[in-house]
Amino acid sequence: MLDLEKVLDAIEADNDIRVVVLTGAGEKCFSAGMDISDAGNPEIGPKGQDLWRRVDRFSKPVIAAINGHAFGGGLELAMSCHFRIMIDSPQAKIGLTELNLGIIPGWGGTQRLMRIVGKSKALDMILFSKRIDAAEAQQIGLVNLVASPEKFMDEVMAFAAKIAERPPIAVRCVLDAMTAGIYEGFDAGLAKERDGSKIVGASKDAIEGFTAFFEKRPPVFKGE
Image (cartoon, rainbow, N blue to C red; front, side, top):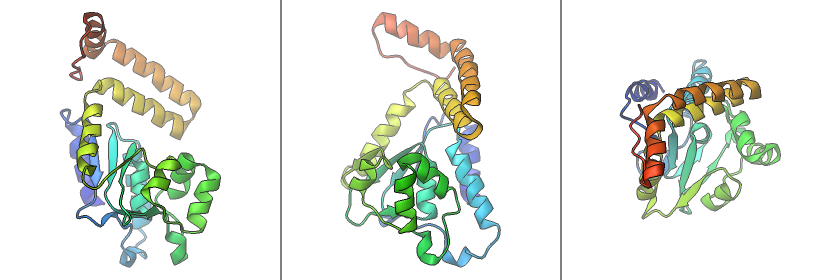
């Protein structure tokens, strides 16, 4: 968690980075969740909540490339990302399985899963510790895209490249407005939207966007 926090610090400070991809090492898991041996550490729960919330509120789009199992805290991290792309493999399942251990999701899972798939489905998944495959995850809206193992990272990077082509300042303003609406309420989200409209309206990217439109060519946004 501390290592991830340092990486996020570096990414946020680097204006050349427009989109972030998180994926698991190896081929078996995106993340199997919390190390059970750390369960008694009183610092783990609050740190997980804070860090996953930071990912959720990150100023640049974050893609979870779910290349294998994502259970417990691993799925909670994936749900904190703005987009989720999952590998289409029988060996890849995702779920909040904490109740099998007599504990509950503690890194935002009770809130984010409900926000994404609805209360009833979230309760069904959490209370019965269900593990679902990529097809069902896409059907209920838990993942945005499903990709075959052979093309998985190619499709992830192609998706990331499309986001990177979008105007960075406008992307950040959209994320800020949505984040404010979720965490602070509807009116706060509208206020951020108004502020964002002023910011993008004064940007060189807006000039480029309108110029490209009239010149009938793709815009080239520089984040200025």
